[in-house]
Length: 262
Image (tube, rainbow, N blue to C red):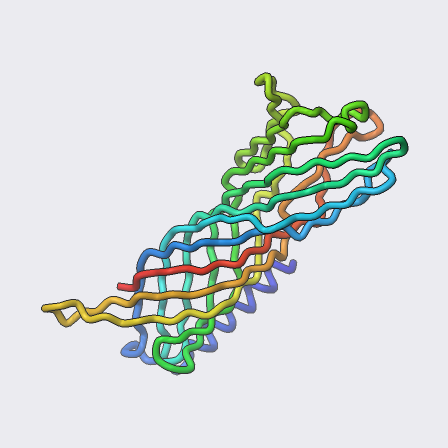
């Protein structure tokens, strides 16, 4: 319901901005775009049974994105833009566990790849400068996570070896160091993601020598905050069956980017 409401609002806003805009004013521009990103997860989880306390800290980790953008200028100050790009996201996690008879910790990285589609409303208060704001929709492509556990957690069922969780199309397989595959085909990563994104950009126009055409060099910065949860947790029910449940986990990223507009 929330997604439909947001999409409807975006379409109504786009139609409202287009009213009174003549065909002569509409211009379409496009080009490649690449970005360096810092990513983390806003993650909270209930303390599992048999555990007195569980503290999780997720720090920023570097990533990247690359793809194409398309801008439709509706009038001199309003532009409707969209992008399609592949983005590497994730976080570095440190988890401290307090058990009845011991305590320990484990840490590792979560790496995820998404196909992202932001829809941006751009306002230009003066030539070359844009304020950008809009929703961003993501489709999960691939993910992996690896954790290393401290030795004193071994007696509580935690392996001291590195454990990799490989996920494709939202399903995951646990792979141990000896190559064994365990717990296949469980849903771990959510298939769809949605976020709110906003930022600023500045364009420098350059004339192409010997022609009447020009290109624009665009530099910008953007902040993106997740609306949908992106991860499921894995646990055993009373029958001993492994099941997944949604946890509070939202992607957050800061990016700086460069683009060429034709």
